[in-house]
Image 1: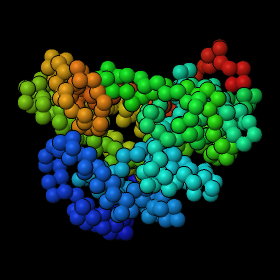
Image 2: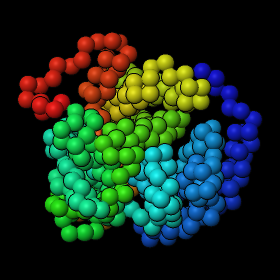
Image 3: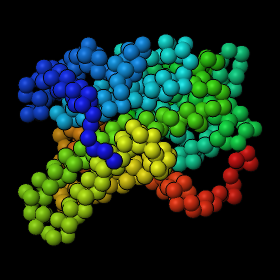
Image 4: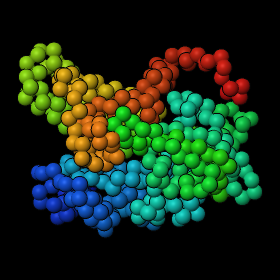
Length: 415
């Protein structure tokens, strides 16, 4: 693993650093902004990012990006993370479906969908998980049937983040019920503002409801809105999940490192750090975060050299399993450090913004603090994007050569 960045990457780093110094407010990071100031900054910052060409900068120039190399994209992420400068926050459009369309889409699809993503005019959500198809995603039952020039969609999706605000959903549906379960799935781009799409928010303990159930009843999308070809949706979806897990290889550990420092400050203030067992747990979590940093560099090195010794799926599975369980354990340490004080709601009842989480339409009678909010969220991280159990199966089968997990007796006949 070569940790030396090429000269051209470091030259590019200087360009980014100079732009950030010229465009970030002088007191950025030194004080907490009010909700009104945050809203104003966000609007102005997105305009500056767009003018600077930093939104979707890794996209090819002909589609509005800068055509950055892998190393330039890495340096861009590192410099923004260094000063805690926000990138444009449309994760589903910028990071997931946009790059997927670039890789798998037709020229017509690129011309139609990419400008709206780049300009922030089109909001997206992800329609993968179902009530009985989460970890075993290939068992999904949502179906799409061709009716002339349109697909007719019937079924249910769950845990669909921001569905209530989305213009489109990139959705997996079964288009060939006779094929084996991985082979009969298509990747569709479905308009959300239509009859036949019902969205039901799932209210969380703190009153927020960014997750949703979505019901499709004879909903429709154009025949040409299939990405990657009919019945090839599984391969396309794996590409999307790869973008989800690999977008911050060398920067992902930084937020966990910063969070652990905040927990340590609390432990020093309330005396919890005097307990040798607590100190040992801090060292244990710190060492895991350093392993995350090294794993990120290994992922980058594998991407650059093509020497993916573990295989793409196994490398992604290993990293996802490790960081999600590390963060869960760190937040359990945080609650233990807070002690009984951690059982009291210590957040701002009037705040619409939770640091480290973002905007939350939370219940006023249940105001959680940033650490409490992160504790709740960390419980889900070992589930979404592939459960830790599934990641272990991938590593066991594809790296260690262990037998496949036994299939349940009630599996679908076409499986």
